[in-house]
Image (tube, rainbow, N blue to C red; front, top):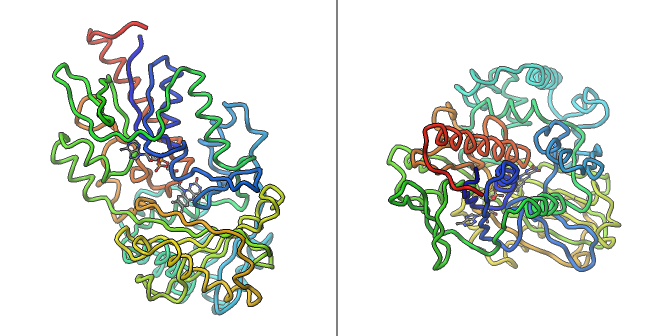
Length: 452
Ligand SMILES: Cc1cc2nc3c(=O)[nH]c(=O)nc-3n(C[C@H](O)[C@H](O)[C@H](O)COP(=O)(O)OP(=O)(O)OC[C@H]3O[C@@H](n4cnc5c(N)ncnc54)[C@H](O)[C@@H]3O)c2cc1C
């Protein structure tokens, strides 16, 4: 029995949802506002490069079973690369490698007192071994970490990273989210031969082979119930009717697209908090982080990023992770930050934003000069990082909305894990399962279905 299903968004969630629904034999239409599949994980390619590069820095952890499992199903596991790059922290004007082969030695080198090093190490170990996250969501990461590892270790080593990622919300983020970050982290970091875009295109190709249609540059403007209990999707001047619609965009967009959602569900969407992301990507003629660091976390001393010491949170030298031969010999560097969508960084012109970020680079390599820059790109996303506050699980909107046949699966519902393509795939497949179950129940209750 075939049902007509619409998926809104061709990011990792939408593609994974569509993949399972198409495999179950349903007729799937995917509507994507952007020019390519991939959403936040999409890549771009300069004419000098063989591989694509993610617009926003991306890697997988070796523990990302859902996405690595899907790649295996696609028969492409041989294309997954899982090296062990150097990730470091900038403290007191120098770089401290954090994942060096001997984690104990790395901890002992940190510029804090011996007691702070010991407490920091023990708390990290405890979080790695502990696996009952639920009670942790009742408290903030700040309160829990201060209590367990002490003020010095928390304030020197973790507080600044929470501020960097969550800005003014940093002291509201719950401890379950923090636990999940430590618990799932691995020192091996993964990517796909050709870049994430190559994986996303492979998945999109399989979908098309299964008969699904992907409509790029096609923005959905409204979802509304029809009088016969189905759902109409409005695209431009067109109107298509479906048995089920899965929206994978943001809570804010969901609210706008589906004004018929009952107030209780709409309130849940309104109450979700999130941060935006901005990155400046540079193709350089020389290596910037000459110690080989791939990922350098920078301490944020205060939530107002425009007054912070460093104008961004992370300096990521992609070609200290992947061979620059794939990128025509360029050294590729990201300067990235998370800020609220109304922050100055979204209003500045690309040149102005790039200028602010580039002006900090000589801190990390005094030899850096502007004539090292061959090319630069700026990418911005207003919805990029959900903020999980205390008791977040009580605030989450269900994947199944109260409107019959309408489902919502977004980054904000990934929890307690930090959002990522792994969880996008997991949630996409979970929502496909719900849709299939609901079709099954409708068939059992004798509702009419269309034959293929
Ligand atoms: C700076 C940054 C770093 C990250 N690092 C990592 C990492 O290292 N590893 C990792 O795995 N993940 C990482 N992520 C997270 C990862 O990108 C996301 O979790 C994942 O891509 C989310 O996929 P999604 O499909 O849920 O959402 P999205 O990718 O946002 O897809 C939603 C899609 O819906 C489309 N859309 C929206 N509205 C409409 C409409 N009205 N009509 C039609 N289409 C619409 C959008 O264009 C978009 O393509 C990072 C994200 C950011 C921002």
